[in-house]
Length: 322
Image (cartoon, rainbow, N blue to C red; front, side, top):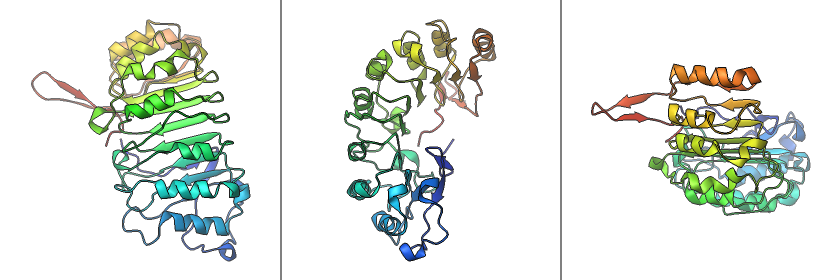
């Protein structure tokens, strides 16, 4: 699976691409109401004739940004070897002009612009520091990504999408104080693309004490999905969840069995395991164990494929890698 389309919606709003043709306030006729959409500002990923910061300046000039609720950052120029430092600086500098901003997505970039593991990132927490009222923050791309431990009083949703999440990012998230966070979604990826975290690095999250409001937990797209499920089987965080997502990774019968034979899961509203390597017998066991209690399951293999090298080794793949 690849990410082939830009976000259709974000923070509960349809995404609207800020037009290249709008140069300033005089061109704003026909634009949607500032609060009615999530504004996507982007330039060409390759050989762009405009820097992202210049496109953002046009956006600030044309739109009443005091009413903007959500911002989606698309491609900046040469995303495969240039980080978003200038992008982040421009947004931080405009924080006083974005008092209503509650949702921010950094790097809504498709594979045609840059494969997820080739998106050059950087330290993204200055955006959280600059917007203390932010409720949703998401970032795509793990190459050079840094997320040092931070504190944010209002953030409710945090999503980090990678083909390989650096262990420093996992530890930074795990050490952060996010008392209002209800949704956490981490795409951990593979070691081939920099995903060097181990289950132990997730311990503060699994303990359920650092994120007291958490109800939706996704630890997915991982080559260590079985180990994650084994840890979740006795993790205190699970008791407070409404939704658990262990999808998109290398999940086999071993991981599913460990999860199923651990602590009760019947309080969950949803358990997402799509893109898996489960046997039909295990799928049946999961359905018979959980569906009578009202748990909504997604057990579709979603095209998960494996290869046999002919020497007895079977190679299985996460949904999103390169």
